[in-house]
Length: 249
Image 1: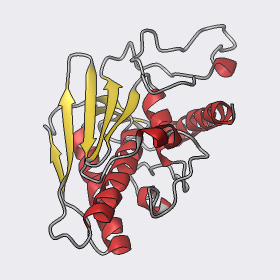
Image 2: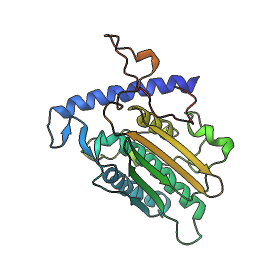
Image 3: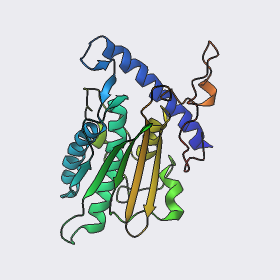
């Protein structure tokens, strides 16, 4: 119940932040942007920026960082908010790199973390895969809880990992310890997308982010208490992607 209430609280915060940033950005027009919305946002380019930042910080924190290989076409673009993608990619890469270093420290070369970006007819999908040992099935629910019992040594490293600007000059939101993955999923779900985590305990973890390409589906996914506007218009994403791991909202 606490997680449900926090989801609604943070989702409202995401919406307020979006409106404020969009208003301020609209005062300084930039080519290719309408406020903070980029007409030709390249997830590959955003992931490359996130990878550079994560590599620097993980290397400073751990003394080493696995190579991050990004597979995809920079020319595959869609209309979206790059800072949202940056937040999600940064969180997933941070955890993937940290887990890989922990599991393979002292064994020689670190296996690479791979990011695969694919464009479909309806979706833009980002997959982050690592060989960091995975997560026990009994602990998977903790990944999505704001009260998850993950320590610094297990999962969550440093909030400064996601404090640098994203593509387009918009500052990426800041996540504190233990909040990264639940918040990343909220950012994915805000416009009707999903974030799935598929661990293979003893080997690694695959994370899948699916974002809508089609404008008629990229409407705000608001909590029920604030979904109805003063004009009694419903902003719910119709037919949104099914999140098999989401048991709330």
